[in-house]
Each structure stands twice: as C-alpha cells, then as structure tokens.
Image (cartoon, rainbow, N blue to C red; front, side, top):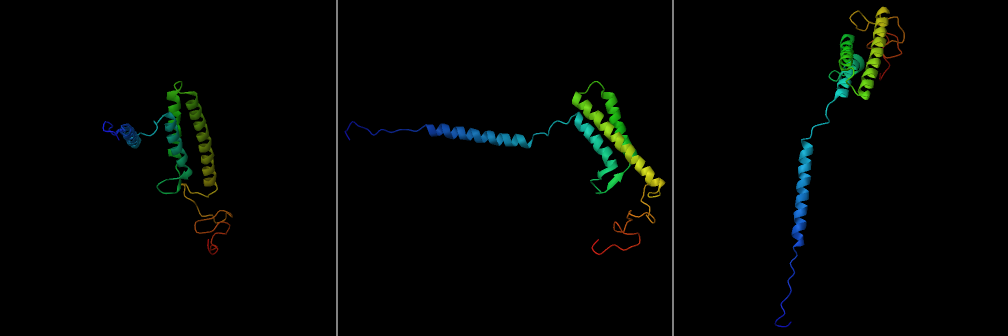
Length: 166
C-alpha cells in the first residue's frame, strides 16, 4: 500500500432502511390483529329479525329441542304469537323492503302458517283419539299397537318388559 492510499471504508446504510421497513410492517400486523379483536360482527339486519321470529315459532312447534332442556316443546299459543308478529312486521314494512327481504318474509310466513295448521290438526286428532290428554300430556297406549308408552321398547306391547340392552 502506498502511503497516500487509505483503506476504503464502505458504510452500508441500507440495513437501516430494511430494519425500519420490517419494524413498520410488524407494527401494522400488530395493529391489524388488535383491530380484528375489537371488530364487531356483521351488522344485524332485517333478515335476522325474520330468522329470529321464525326460529322461535319453529321451536314452539316442536321442530327442534329447547336449548336449555334438550326436549322438543309444543306450545302452539307461543308459536302463533311469533307467526303473528311476523305478520305485523309484513304489514308495517309493506313497500319498504327489498325484493329479497319481501320474498323471504312472504315465504317464511307461508311455510310457518302451513306447519302451524298441520301441527294443530295432528294435536287435535291425537286428542280426539285419546292419545293425548286435554293438557297435552301423552296418555297410555293400552290398546294402540305400535305406539310405545314410556318404559316400553318400540314394537312391544305395553306391559311387556323391554328386550335386554334396550
């Protein structure tokens, strides 16, 4: 090396900008995760109101079990009230709904009303035949083959002990 030659020092300032970019990227990811934690679910709308009332009507027509008891429940007066509430909603919103909302409301009401009538007729028929009492409780099926009573296995006559393992 000559006396006048000094070693060349190269300073790499590029790493600073890369580190700064990575830091900003991580900060954005953390910010996005925090925003997701505090995000609200989709906005609740008119369709959700229809679904809520229809679900209540179906539950009280015995379509599926009560979430608390696990047993199907038939309370036609409460089912009718929910169906009637949907009818009020239909009447009060006439002309103010989108085509999809109107079709869903009309279709839901139509189906619920048909199911209500069908279930009410079945209950009345069962009461007329003595299979259920006036209070809606099941009556013993003493002379009704094929209808199991509590404590008997399906397909056995009342009073016959259930088969082992049943």
